Length: 245
Image (cartoon, rainbow, N blue to C red; front, side, top):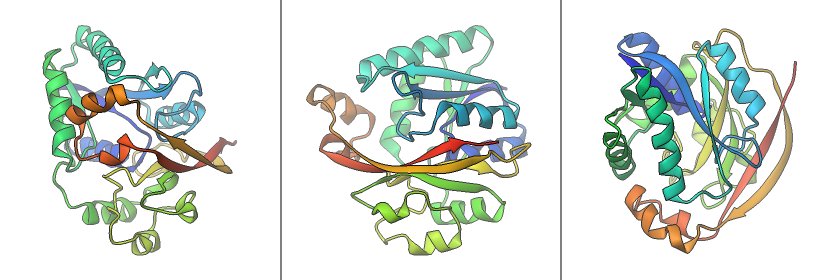
């Protein structure tokens, strides 16, 4: 069955693609990634678009990018997604694949939105143990670096770290080992799904603080009511990654 994979460039979408390659149930026609139109970086993760394109080239899967305005409203986001899925639909694609693991409200939101355009959501990692998933990720030979951490859960020392068994042991007890609650985000630069490693150098570490607009609070409740930290001032540490030869 033809499908599009929602690709963040991080560990969950990478492990999802590995599962898909093993099962061969779905033929992934495209990777779909939203980026900031202003900064030309992967939304939330902050990874440069050049590295995203290098990932797609190494994976051998065509990349489709949705350019999002700065701080898009939920209405704007939904409209752009529907427009993009409409293009895929005309190519015979009816399945949209995600790397979500256990956020029920987010899964329902995705399924409800997909149903409006006659798409079906697929969740290969759903309800798997995050402790086991991160162990499997490491043992399979995937390599990933933390590019963003939420200061509410992790301090600056974690950003820029490589995901390995030591990293998992160092995580505080309140942090999910896969960062499923938004504690951290990653960039995967090597592993069994890639034809060649992604070359990069670590750049500067920067701090950014965000606040969701009050007009979007109700909309966010529909997407993910459990993510209450998104409604207040939240700071993030980012490690910039610089493409290298």
